[in-house]
Image (cartoon, rainbow, N blue to C red; front, side, top):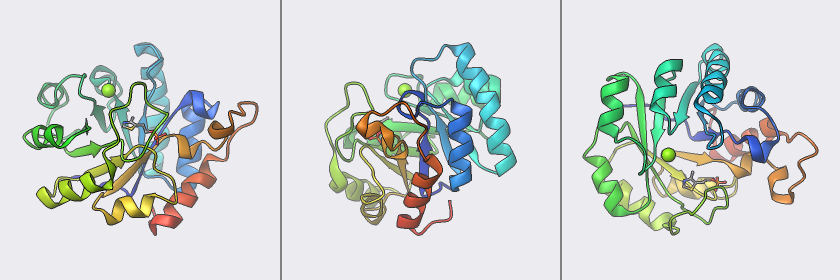
Length: 217
Ligand code: TZP
Ligand code: MG
C-alpha cells in the first residue's frame, strides 16, 4: 500500500507568482515529501519540461512527485505517478499506460464516486472539497468532515482530504480519518490578499502545516 505523507502539497504558478521549480524548491526546503504538479494552463510541452525539472529536485530529496491530469506527461517524464479527476482517463486506462508500479490517485466528490473508486486499482482516493475552496473552477458541493469519517469507516484505502484545508483545519481532517491533507491556496500566503508583487514564504507555510500535524513530512 502506498505510504502517503500527512501533507500533500500542490503547486500553483498563478497563486504563488513562482515557477514550478521555485515552488518545489521551497516545498522541499519546508519539508514536504509529497508534491503534485498541477497546471491547467500549461501546454503538454511546458508541463513536461516542468515535470522533468521538478523530478530532479524531488528525487534528490527522496520525495514523491505526482502529475495532475496528464498520464502522457507522467509517462514521458517517468514521474512517480498521476492524479486523475472524474473527467480524465480512468484509473484502469492510466494503469495500462503506466504499469503496476506507478502511483495513481483519483479525485472523488461524493460517496458514490468513492464507492466506484474503491472498485479500481487507485492507490489512493482524494475526497473533497471538505471545506469551501476558491482554487478550483466549478467546485463540487462541500462534502464536510462527516464524509471523511464515513469513507474511513468503509475502507482502509489511503485517503487524502482536499479543499479549503488550512494549518488550523488540517488536524481535524486527519482526526476524521484522512491519511493526508492536500493543499493549494494555504501554501501561498499572498494569494489571499492578492499581492502578486512579492514572493511568498512557501517553506514557512509547509512548516506551519507539518507542525500542526505533528509530522516530519
Ligand atoms: N479538488 C477538490 S478541492 C480542490 C481540488 C483540486 C482545490 C483545493 O485547493 P485549496 O486552495 O487547498 O482549497
Ligand atoms: Mg483532472
